[in-house]
Image (cartoon, rainbow, N blue to C red; front, side, top):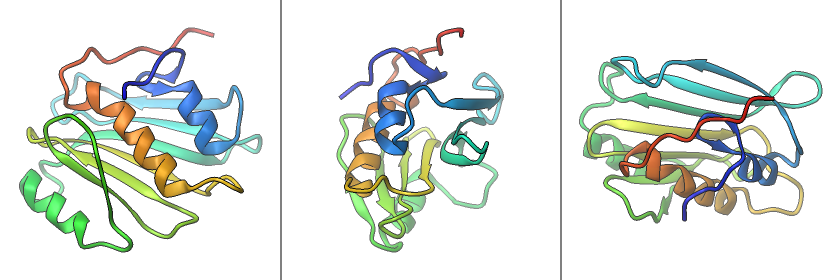
Length: 154
């Protein structure tokens, strides 16, 4: 399942961000560089008070003490409430954490990773399922070889 335009930040689909946060047309902060050696790039979706409610971070796991990609995936599988994410791409991932504040990570075989952190689940929604589907939608450009989609200028 690949996300569709429009995108609120590079690589972050507007519809997915809205489902996760309940915020339509949110303010965002985009930082970092996708083309850097360590590939660190972040999109923060903000609420009306300017607080981060959703963080999407792309980075490499190299240099962070997490070991090889499979070692890090194994470590994730053993964390709190770990649920595997199903996606058709190299690597693997899990949603972890408490139900009200789920985190999703997909670790590619080449050591790139996307980390989605939802700071509070929307009332009446399944945060684990929503985060899993959201991460799945990001995998094509995280490690599936697709071109990284850019946000529309506002």
